[in-house]
Length: 477
Ligand code: ARG
Image (cartoon, rainbow, N blue to C red; front, side, top):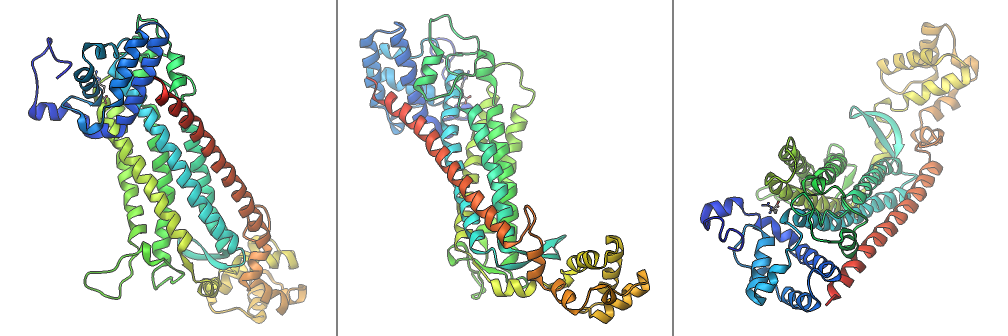
């Protein structure tokens, strides 16, 4: 092995396996070669290696594939060892003025940057699916719940847009995190920077970063960017699990509000009739796994003294696990929502259940008869306790007893009662900002679709910046 050489005896077997990050380093293999190239270009430009040495080393890197790597503690050592095996001692110039500590931190940021872009794209996809289904359903009346009890009628559009707005916030958080992830720690070396006359801004530019993680001690030792990405993933999964839970509930025969497409369901090995919402259940379950990755990473990173500590290696796989799980979960949910069949007739029929129009009845009593809201609330509460659909007589009797007045004598007649008890009228009346009335949800759906389009454009632009920098770097000979 390359590094222990003259200093320490060789290791192999279980000790090597224990300290090795080779398994997780699959994630950063490509990134490591890019970091090597950027560092070499800069070394050449600063006259720290000759143009000939540069060409020789880059040509050596060109031939290296993951499968060709030998043993090593990590991918950094294995690549350098392979390079030297291929081109001789000149390959040993590559590690001038750097350490694996700044190298690995740079690699993680490069890969995480790509993962965040992919995740943001998936979040846009799900938000779009929700907003589009909402746009089709501004007139679809559904029951709205609090405490999972029928509360007030709303619309499917209103409900789906609530989930879409949560995802738009998830997008903002990811984008914000991206701006802190996309900074270069390279050139910090082990932690104390280097006496070689390197140019950190140049390697940052070559790798498509927006600036530096400047303090060299901070640069190698912080993993707060990784905690941030995992935190955002955990919050996103918490949001997703709420949607998943509803897909599961709404698909039961008790609710019967929707049917998932076959693709997103499974059957039973014994009960031939079964159509189970397994993908939504797994989104719900994987939410727990992502929380686990977050907690593992937090616990590993807490209380570490400055600067680099090998513990940090243990945090990284949690990042990859957490991010990749989140990404696929978002994608599966976009497919589920996009292909689901909502049973709008059944939803509308259920929308008045549990006297869910009671609030509007109390509200219209206030508007028509000018009694205080609390009095109206008590009158309607009494009607609810009696059960059944109230008539004008029931209303007059309850109001007489509680408030000493008869609504029918104050302009609140049969017509007003019918309107108050109609779920569709209930929804139409809630036309203020953020409410379920069709014009308002139509406005919100259009607004959200605009924002999603802008977010899609932003992701494309960020991706393009990174891709063009890396494409140019790959061409440098
Ligand atoms: N595999 C290591 C990690 O992930 C790379 C850095 C190793 N540095 C060291 N001083 N041993 O953190």
